[in-house]
Image (cartoon, rainbow, N blue to C red; front, side, top):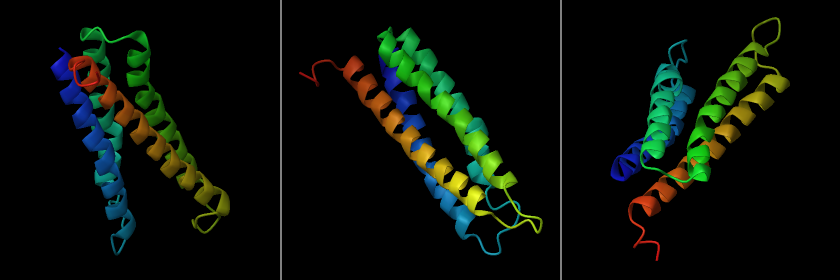
Length: 138
């Protein structure tokens, strides 16, 4: 189970990192239609939550320490925050539908929260590797 924990945490890390690529694709798509962020949205709303749940499951099955299981749960909460920030940023427009300074600030927090999430997933993966190979950390 510990090897599975390492593998699923690595898949999660790769997927979180790809989210930045998918966000850039959406941001730089010209003309930017409603579907510019489809890949970013789908990955964030479906793939990442599933991988996060699998990471939590394998952390428990690998008999990881409680602190590591808690760390594995944290990205799920950060994903919820991401969704809330994205919705708030998208909803903070003026009467013409243009972005407002408040909305852009919230969008910046969305990006910052994504960076925090990646750091947490890196920590989970590193801890999973140490758990699976204790001789490496000695």
